[in-house]
Length: 339
Ligand SMILES: [Zn+2]
Image (cartoon, rainbow, N blue to C red; front, top):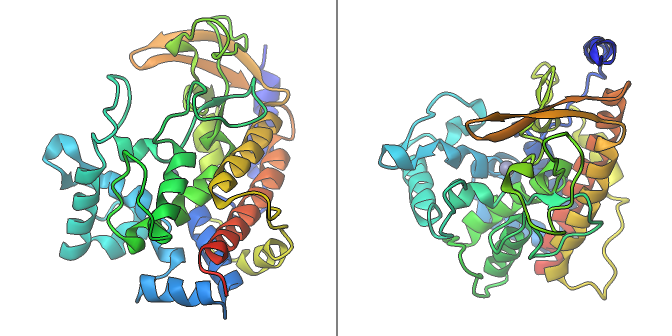
């Protein structure tokens, strides 16, 4: 029934604009590069340089993902050497020791439930139902160690204040690398917004009535499209798109992104950004059709049919989100270390 739509969609992907706006390594590095360009000549820019030493926000932006190569199941050994080009610069003895140390500190400190992953992996997202227009800690899919609270904790470390539990960020350098990553992730709509579906593929509100854990589509990870999962589709864009080629154009746009008004405290900023991501997530689900669920080992999955010209929606939302992420990171660092 949905085949014609899907076929057309796949065809149109072949002619997608040749630009990279991914939240794979490319996207994170772009966010770091935009922030660095915006901070040039400022006190915050100087502080970043001091903390990063011979590295940079651009390079360290992916560290939060590279540490996922440390396997708690294999006695915390690093198991992805050589697998990801963006991680190679961390794969020396000292670099691996630093990643192992981080994961040991941040693996079970949040007391993960039986169906939850390692704590540090949970720092990268929330799964707020799109029945809401805003983020609030306490909603299904949020926690004291979700992405909003992870950003708050990293900011605390950079401000020289105690970090909230359960976070175990070692020092300013580690906090800054992770903050750069999380500010990228919080602008990926599916790292904040999630759709909750019943067995018939009907949208439900997990915060009304009894919550069925099986209804969570886990930020689109349980939604199958012809190209893989919806989450992966939004995280990644083919590698043939060269990293860095859009940085200058995006930085120009980023300079025009408005700062939050002075009445909004720094602590509120990540929640405001999360609200923006929820709005974007609503846009990316507009016109999507959902199948009945198929139970599998990890819960449920649903097939989806995306509307025509979906890559246009992706292009626009991704460009806008990456621009904002770079701008927001720079604004945040300037608020922490003002001129
Ligand atoms: Zn991430």
